[in-house]
Image (cartoon, rainbow, N blue to C red; front, side, top):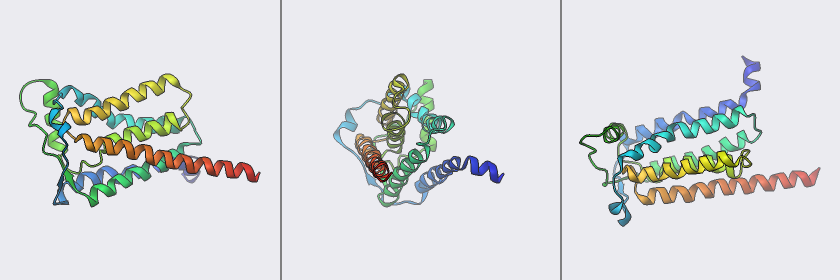
Length: 213
């Protein structure tokens, strides 16, 4: 067992994911005095239940992409995970310090498979702690870490498919009325900031190490 853990010790970084959904969903019940997040665009965006598909794809997209990088044996994996979770925990900190909510979510009643699917998701995911959008941050951050600055940047086809997936996930958060537009915009900006700063630090350290050789 010790030898196995030593060989695959970077796999333990996946454990950083465990507290995130626990804290996020439990916070729905103990946080109070939520600030309403709303901009004019929110009222003009229609409710499109079919976008529940990319909204739920997110639950697979993020962990599967991390697992793919790990299985490829990439040396960038620890950096990818540490950067990703630094941003995730920062978002979680904002959620806890600045409780938020939206008032634009419909009842999702009536016929239709996708409407029923939305209703099911709504019943489990309350419209609170929406700022910034964890959906948008995690999807974009893992894409940037993998395909823009990370080990798979030369894989053009995968990068394009991943980019389209991220766009659909971000759009889904507003089309199924789980988030305000501002939640997504802030999350996207924050993802670029976190990944960009981490990459700049990593690049500077690499250049310094090369100079000292």
